[in-house]
Image 1 (spheres, one colour):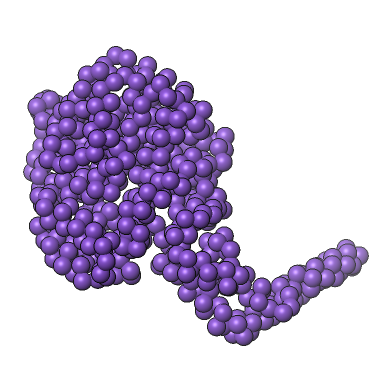
Image 2 (tube, one colour):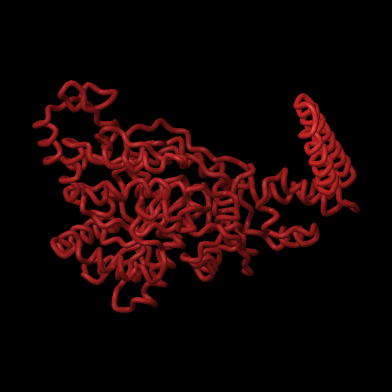
Length: 532
């Protein structure tokens, strides 16, 4: 699988705050602990180890027991089994990524998150051999946004799971997915890899009772041989460790106060998430609603349930599993229960983690290193040959389509038609006219400015008309350029945000994943283009 790359900053698909983070701009330095370099992990290990000195052993024991219970009914690799055992040891740390329970993994970047996580643990083990590093996939089982996860795209078609949903999605019954399986199966060609895709879907979703168990099976089927450990944090024993922080949230709303101050300091950027007064949900099997404090009562939104202060603290003590952190508090929960060094996520995730450093400092929990996951564009050999025959580089294909077509038109044209020389000549003429206005009546200045604007506009109009004429002349080639870009960037978006892994898996099978793991470098900060 030959590869090429373009920097994230030059790809045009990342926000200013992420580009500035990658460039290590000084104005963002207070928003994170250590930048992701291999050398900085030594500092992170030291700091996390100090934090865990007090009760790290008990936390590790609870974590290991929870994982063993969650894996009790699933066959796992020796490497995953060993990694779970390693978590008991003081010299073991985790690298974590998280993702929603998207149907059949959802878009491709689900794979890229986990591959980045697995590869970083390998790289850290090579550089710090006296420590062990375990890759963790944190399943977002307590999310509620079913409409965001109930579909996947395959070869331009959307396969959607139609179902009523309430409560945490991880507890959602998988009934009804047999219908999705039947429709999806008919779209698959013959062949061993297609049969394997069917088998994975069927065993994951038709043989497991809820979405959390199904997703665990699926992720394990794809990545278990690489030692991936999959965690469902919707767990009473794990939640007990978070009780002091949930209590602090209920009584003092610390996350709102600290995160709001941070947001004010970065208001020149687009803010990814805004905190609520209380950033906790109350959950049961068919309920997930915000906790609101009104008129000296803690009320569960859209229900008649309410608590006094004493009552809600008693509820937290007896039933910690009913208190669910939202997007603001979930990162803290993660870092409380895991011996974690680094969180790996997409641009949107890293952007909202950057809002949380002050909240972590207030909570006296070590802020993890934040690493932007690997991004890839998978290109078939046929598509690569098309690009070559059209004289297109891969960086060209990352351009907005209008810019790409304009650039290609200029390349195809037998003459230059950007009129830059004419514009420079015009500017020089008007410089001379402005010099004359200083020696005559000031009313002449307005006439000169109006004439300059008119002539500039005329040149620009001629330039546009000439470009349009050249586009008509080369319409056939330009249509092929647009068609190729649309194949690689479906819906004018990144392939990894649209396409399901199965499109490539039916061609390459498990070799797809092994080759991705073999080629991707988690600390490279480059958007890879891979020819398959």
